[in-house]
Each structure stands twice: as structure tokens, then as C-alpha cells.
Image (cartoon, rainbow, N blue to C red; front, side):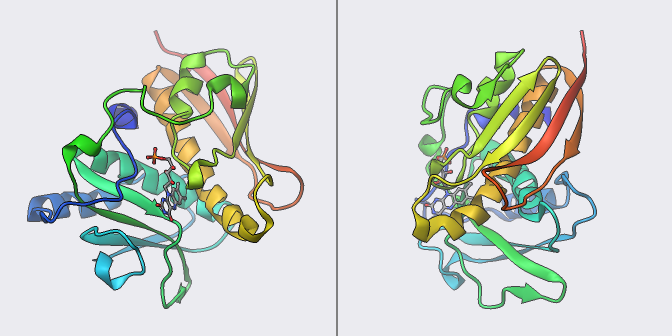
Amino acid sequence: MKELLESIYKRRSVRTYSKEKLSSEEYAAAEEYLHQLKPLIPELQVEFQIVPCSETNCKFNAEYCLLVYSTEGNLWLTNVGYMLEQWDLKLASMGIGVCWYGMGKVEEERQCDLVYAIMLSFGKCDPELFRNGDYDFNRKSASDFWTGASDLRIAEIARLAPSAVNSQPWRVEQVDNKFNVYRKKGGVPLLSAQLYKRWNKVDMGIFLCFVDVALESEGYTFSRTLGTDSDEGKRALVATYTITRQSA
Ligand SMILES: Cc1cc2nc3c(=O)[nH]c(=O)nc-3n(C[C@H](O)[C@H](O)[C@H](O)COP(=O)(O)O)c2cc1C
């Protein structure tokens, strides 16, 4: 995953697309990469459908939308976030604009064992829209969400992760070489609480993707155990990482 590091400083939610269409090579490469995404939970089945954006309720002028379906299970939306963030980053590296679209709706929520998870718009865009370094982000500072960090570079990379309405629901507590990643709940208007509950589970997968890219690119090896996406309590323990070795 460390090959995705550069894209972390480049990606941005692209909501304005150009009229130009993807070349057949670009389309094929974007589709092909869907089959290379690393899952967080291999037991979950995840399927994709690419449709013209105009056939969805997405309000952007993108050429396409990617519809994501998955089997349900503990952390299934987090798995979707983890996988599709790799795709978001890869497409940014190819100069293709992407935006997660939580407001997306489909007519058929269920397709056999699979349930609709989320959609992402994508298409050609002005290259100027992409970021050009780590200064153009509106994010919490690392110390606001990561306590006890032994290597601030990991937190500095992970803090750049995108999230629904930029809510940044992640909290990390580290002691020595072990850290817990939590999803913080609440703090949002009651009416949208249901939506946040869903989106923030996707956000956590996006965050874990950024953490993994950061750890790998900083030369760490690690093991990770997964927790829960339970809605009980004020926070959910999503993952525990143990950094096992730092390569020279
Ligand atoms: C799960 C998820 C759902 C999102 N849904 C929408 C959406 O429905 N509409 C929209 O304009 N942006 C949406 N976004 C984009 C976020 O607003 C954006 O990622 C965040 O503000 C950070 O900005 P950046 O992606 O440009 O770094 C979504 C992002 C995520 C991760």
C-alpha cells in the first residue's frame, strides 16, 4: 500500500468534472484496479457496478458513478471504506477525479446476498483541482485525536484522511508499540445521527487505509486485530495495532 502515499497529498473530493471523457485505457485501468483492492475482511464479498452518473441521484456532472455492494457483517461498511479509499487514491495518481457520495441512493438496495453500501462519482477533471502538498487540508491536528503517539509522522499522514462532512470521527490511544483506534460517536444533530452512524463506519475504513499506508511507508511492520462497529456506548473500538518491528 505504500505506493499510495504520494496520492494522499494529491487527492481531493472532486465535485466539478470536465466534459472530456475517460479514455478507454483509463476506464479499463480504473475498472481493473477494483479487482486489486486489499480487503480488511476477506470473508466479506464486495461487488461493484459502474453506471453513468446521469442515471444516479448524484448531483455532480461526473461521467460515472461506482456503486458498491457488500455482504453485511461486523465492520462491513468499514471494509468498504478501506477498500475504496485505495481506489480513490489510485485514481488520484492517474489524474482522475473522485468523490465519495454518501447522499447517493439506488432503487434496488438489495441484490441477492449483497446490500448497497455507498457510491463514488468519478471522471475527468481539471488537474489543478488536485492538491499539491500537505498544506491545503482542513483537518484536526494530530494531537487532537492521537494520544501517546511514539512516531508523530504516522499520525501526521493519517490525519489527512477524508471523512463524511469532514467529521473525522477517529480517535487513537497509543501506549508504547500498541495503539487502539476508536470511532467516536455523537456530537452531531439528532436528525442526521442515522446518516452519520452509517457514513462514519465508512470513514473508519478510510482512516485505517491511511494508517496502513503511513505505517508501511515509514518502514513499520504491524499486526492488527479488528474490533466492532457496535452502536452501543460513546465510542467503538474498531482496531488494535501492534507495531512489531521497524525495518532499518
Ligand atoms: C463516507 C463519505 C461520504 C461523503 N459524502 C459526500 C456527499 O454526499 N456529498 C459531498 O459533496 N461530499 C461527500 N463526501 C466528501 C467529504 O465532504 C470530504 O471528503 C471532506 O469534506 C474532506 O474533503 P476532501 O475530500 O476534499 O479532502 C463524503 C466523504 C466520505 C468519506
